[in-house]
Length: 147
Image 1 (cartoon, rainbow, N blue to C red):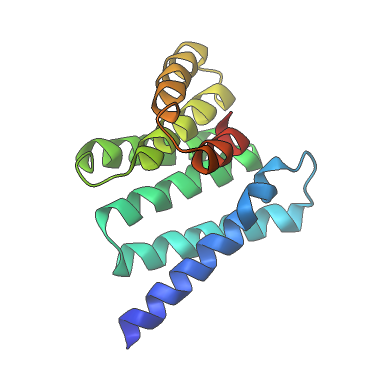
Image 2 (image 1 turned 90 degrees about the vertical axis):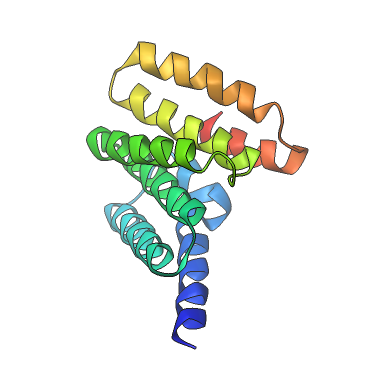
């Protein structure tokens, strides 16, 4: 029962953090919204780490990298993006094409924010190639977040 409750909490938290991707598309955020977004992402990642799979942990790192990039924190975004990429390599047999594309996409965004243009361009090219295999709905989400 405790595991089921944690799974439900983890799912609710990740949905709250993403809000369908709209949170990341805001040009202006209030400081409180940004902090809430960061806290929700950490809470979601923590819950998935406790009850999820290796792919869920990868998705948690992706969420954290994306949230920190949206908040303008390049160092934290890169740190979580690199963890996400490392997990993506480890999870290659289990991850979906969407997982791979978004791992590369969040890393490209993080490195661009950090001013590492060469690495960002390399990762962006890999991300776009990976995203070309996505179905329309997934490609749309990818484009909103990382396009």
